[in-house]
Length: 178
Image 1 (cartoon, one colour):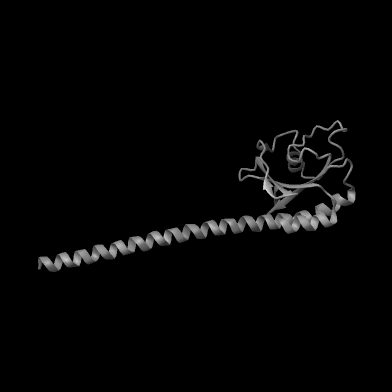
Image 2: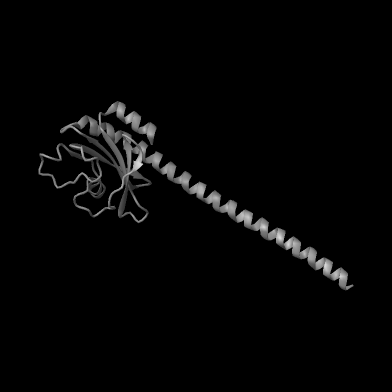
């Protein structure tokens, strides 16, 4: 995702970027910070039904969200998905295979940092991010399947060698008895 974030940074000025990805059950988000450094954010699990979560709101409402100032607005949203210095945010939904898979979140340390043009640009980029996420997930699944097949092949090879050894022992036993 690093190259995508660098490209987004060229188009939109932000101080913080993250992905909030829904789990397999579709009710809890895993937050992955993308900028300024890539890491999994250590936070309480953010649930889809969390009324104070920007990502949950975007996923439920299936539309972008722009908070102009966390501190001055009487906003119902918390900054739990962002850095503590974040003053404003822009979040867009991510869709893959016809369903919401998460949100792409940008934060700024300045209030009113994002404009409608930024939202339009981010909504144009979001499908590409979703495809990259989907491809990465498919690759992870493929690698896990390959590991499973390799392990099964090794077990089959070991069992075959044991059968050959047992067959040789049977042949020797029958030749000794005759």
